[in-house]
Image (cartoon, rainbow over all chains, first blue to last red; front, top):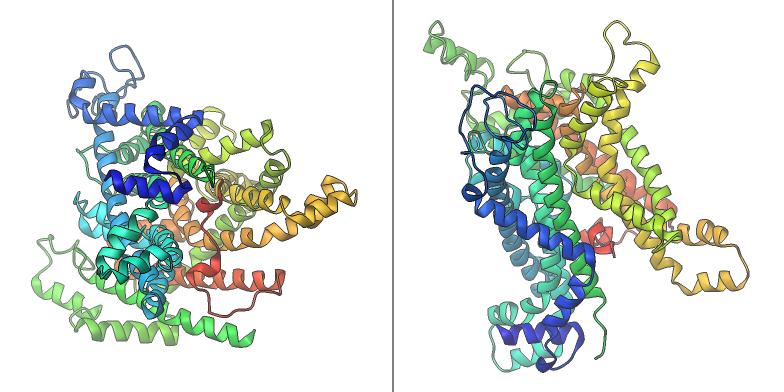
Length: 298
Length: 335
């Protein structure tokens, strides 16, 4: 692993492994204050979601018919919903499912994107044309309509949603990976590996792929924000994760119906989506910035 | 040019057919359909269900059904009858297309105008206060869920301030007047425009900043041209082309936004028709809308390509619209 990292560092800006490029990169990343703040916020959001039952004093589905649709108060920081459930508790628990679905979607998109992109960039020729055609196809289709159809047919099965989101958002990743592979496959070290008798699979995954990782990480960060937005849009339309499991999207679906009586209930989940995806976008921006500022020689 | 157009269209036709096949097969596996709601009714016998299925042609093999459907669409623009209302789907869609195009068109123009202003403004005042402000707005615009923005706009402007209507396309009884119509359009169009404005203006800013660093700009400065003339007459012209390609590339996602905005604001367009159809398991309608909107998207893409070729005669259509012919994605150019 450390060898891998050293190789990445070498690709980014030269220097020996002893120069330790990763800490330098981290320093550059964190010196951009918005990215630092966003990282801290994201850590907090993830921690709260993971530790959900410990963080909030109410149960996720605890119904309290004496306090329906209450506004914010000391006992319920974000008020209660139409069944008297604590909005904050559902928000924190909802973060779990929202983040799980988004992570799984991004992982699937990464897997698909890396495989197709590597295939297209490394093989070139007809394979490249084919992959490019498929990417084109996905880019010129009203993908969201198809996502909606697929999700509605699945009847809100939890595992289906990441599959659908990931399966329709891998194109950016594929393009990024393909571009890196196109430029890297002609490099000397690839030729050297091949002359040593290293197989194609090994060249692709052990020699070229590590160098193509940085742009993939950036695409994944921005993709996470997008996956979250798609998931919440799906849930908001009622085709995503089904109640009683809370996600930020389906909390909004309920709140929308009662927006005249309890506008605050609609505010909180949306804000959670907004802040989290904002953080991911800012971190993506920071990563890109830190990569771009890498000095050419040192 | 004609040759290129023909080639593009030839590429496009199989695409639409492929989409229709995939959607068709997907929808066949769907629960419900025309008999779904009736099958629980004790007064409806098995023979009745069979008759209904026969009426819609659902008793035939899948491939045969598809070919019948395709033939009717191709020859008569007939998408079959709605499972729910019994109306011809093509008429339902055609009734809704103007509203969708109106919403998307005004959002599109709004986003375009704002992106131009913000992009140029940010590039001119690079790393200054205005640039940071715009950067904040665009980052927020990329991250905000459209439906939540819509909901919040309704809460603030309709429920609290009572300035604008919360939804619909016109007030009952006052539907004809243009002022009333515009009032209904403002909120959905602005909300829909917001997300696009963000990525477009970022992209334009990046392109401008890159172009400003070019040699010919230094020459223009050396000649003593004012910064204003340099930016508007020299830089903008060169930076506008990738901007156009990005704008064109995002047209499909404009349809996504339309489904959500139309639902939030109960705007009577195609997106709402689609959502409604999906909820009521009206699959002929769903299929029709998917096909019509893919067709529209492809048409817009084609128009965008032609626009690019008009703006920059250097573009020679070698390979009809490959993935990389569109330039890098907007995120890639944000820095």
